[in-house]
Length: 252
Image (cartoon, rainbow, N blue to C red; front, side):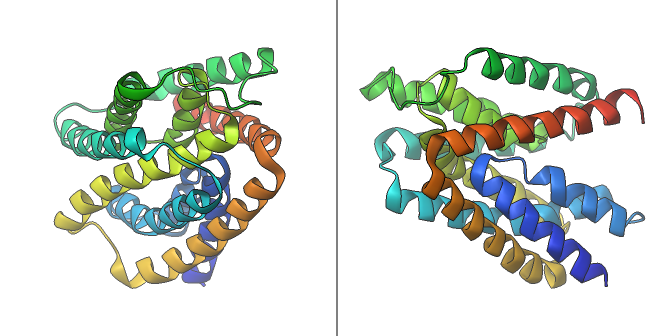
């Protein structure tokens, strides 16, 4: 029964993650609810062992339909991988508790900005080219990679927002780029958790398969309905993240 419940959660998480990021909002709480006595690091590691597959498959699916600037995104993915490792190391030295109350406020700012700027992310009009775009993408990858390793919630959604706001991508192209970078940050975290023995490999296969199913469905809908659909999903997911992180920070 436990495996069935977390597998269903993994399907939904894969769907959300493929469209706009934020799948951890679904799967991580489900793992904590079903296995309340297990060490948190093991549940985080098991979550990464599933989410990396869904995110990776989504990256491949997007690459077949969305023309990505690989010359900028591949170095950015490398920067994200390094940032993920650095963040995971930092969390062993500095507790991330100060971010718990700050995160919902940052997310609220992202949501309000997106709602006010109704044209934001509707058209794909990259602001930078060449080396400037590569450096900006690497800066985003390094910063959010560090955040993902250090704390994590909402990383995929932050990737989408920054690619839209900073680089001028539409929401569909931003989501496609976010999948590649988020796969790299997930891989860094998964390697670290695995080396520390914090992955339930007996659950990982089933959760990965479920995550891939959700990812394929989410990618199909995003590619079919385009940037407007992804924008709506972004607003819904960020709103849910505000409620969840706000509750964790101020009410729990």
